[in-house]
Length: 105
Image 1 (cartoon, rainbow, N blue to C red):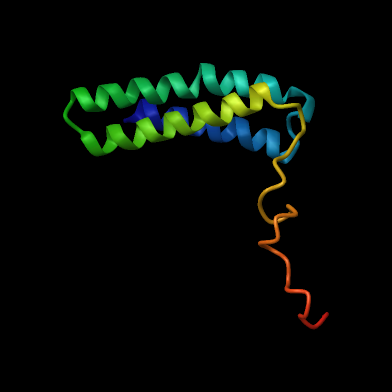
Image 2: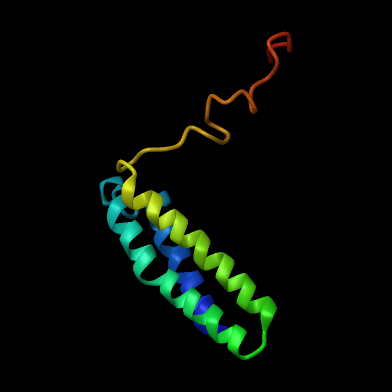
C-alpha cells in the first residue's frame, strides 16, 4: 500500500507542477512520459501485490488510480503541448452559462 501511495504522491506532484506553471507547457509530453513510466508502474505493481495479499479493496483502488494516471499520461503524451479539451468551467459547452433570459448582474 505505501508503494501505491508513493506513486499517487509522485503523480500528483508532477501534474500539479504542470498545472501551476512550475513546468513549462512545452514539456507536457515529458510529463506524460514520466506519468506512464513511474507512478503507473508503482500503482499497478502495488495493486497486484494487494490482490496477492488478499486485500481486494486496496488492490481495486490502486488499480483504478493506476489506470487513471495511465490515461492522463497518454493524453499528455499524444496531445499537442499546452492544449485543453474545452470542457469544464471555461469551455463553451453550454453547461456553465446563464440562460439567455437571465438578468445581467
